[in-house]
Length: 187
Image 1 (cartoon, helix red, strand yellow):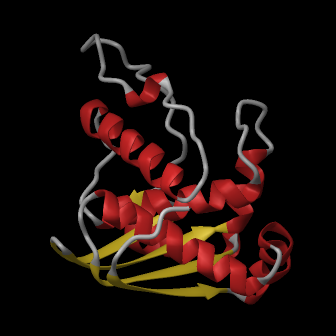
Image 2 (cartoon, rainbow, N blue to C red; image 1 turned 90 degrees about the vertical axis):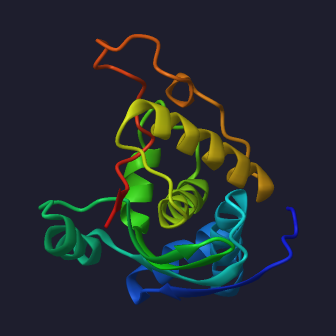
């Protein structure tokens, strides 16, 4: 794993429901907190943000569902929701909430080669990239975000394939542009 010179603080809160799974996935809760913080720092560093604060909360689907409903008007659980508060590079402030249960569910898909631990780290990277200004609502920004995900994940020692979804769209009438890795949202 790369070391990033940073004045970026990360506060990681792991809800009680997530503790047993994260203890198994990471070896212990302290290692989980450290690696989740490193994922946020790596993603922020991709865009030159190395000052400020990012809060990370790991919860279950029952907790993220009402957050998604209240803030985004989506009545279902999701993988990650980002709350960017300030972005003035190199300074960033924001929070994200990620569901460990969605990580378990998504890694059970046959086309997903990630472990639940890697999937959860990817959610933290994805959410942090939203906080530092990335968007994934249209093809070109989505491709840039996918490339940033690959770079940040590599920095924490996880190789992601750069899929066709990370490449620019070639046809403006193609509605099937790549598959999203997940549905993370930003406020």
